[in-house]
Image 1 (cartoon, one colour):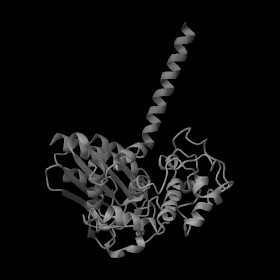
Image 2 (cartoon, one colour; image 1 turned 90 degrees about the vertical axis):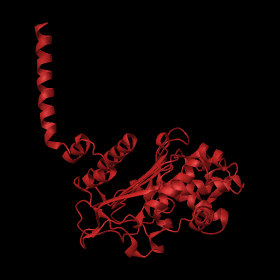
Image 3 (cartoon, rainbow, N blue to C red; image 1 turned 90 degrees about the horizontal axis):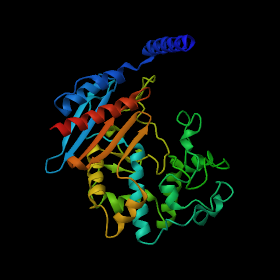
Image 4 (cartoon, rainbow, N blue to C red; image 1 turned 60 degrees about the vertical axis):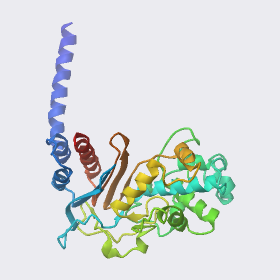
Length: 347
């Protein structure tokens, strides 16, 4: 018994020492963001966020029955001391996947694509180059259940990104699958690169033009673009990465279908509400969409983080953009976003 007590005492001491030691490695901005008393207004919370290391932030809030509200803090361009502008263009990263999934839905409803056809059916040239191509269906790719490796996981990808889709796809060709098709979920940008190429093939022209015709134009989203190459760079919010002092807004990543789109917070908010209330869909389309993909998303490319969600219990769309990435900024951004939602609930 004495020996057992002695072991327990030693374990307690080890635990205390480990706890004290860990304090030296705590990301204090995360702790500060978490424990600071909740302010009364969204604007106060956005102002506070700049103190956690973000260069600039834009928040768009669309509460049902109210005029949309915009909140900004920090810099659009920190070198030139240009304040954040709520109407600046922003790289929305993987939020783009929502638009691609809607495009797939419309083509499936029109019977121009089938969710149950395989990668081998659509791209026979990939048989033997992508493992299980004859078993991976379009549905599995949309839902990230294909097992195809994620090209952005390639070491050094962001430091030396490919110049086109061919180079991008080559990063995963002839590699073993991460798992058997439909056995689990694993997020892979490669799925959406292939889906975008498939849409191109199905419609006979670029999928971004199809998205424009079928989604953007009906919703009058005039500030949403398929890529950085389509916009006036002066309309872009600057982007920053921890440890790199330069503005990286001109960095153009070839993320076809995976995160190449550029938009304002307002345009993303209008799209997200139409997606969630069903007004974006024609008859029979929403049932298809609901069976294959989600109604909210986050986005990330170097220098740009975004969160786009609809909160049904308060009938509110909240879009958050911040133009600093790296370190613990992703975690901090999520804390700030959740605090904004708490403020809106309280109101």
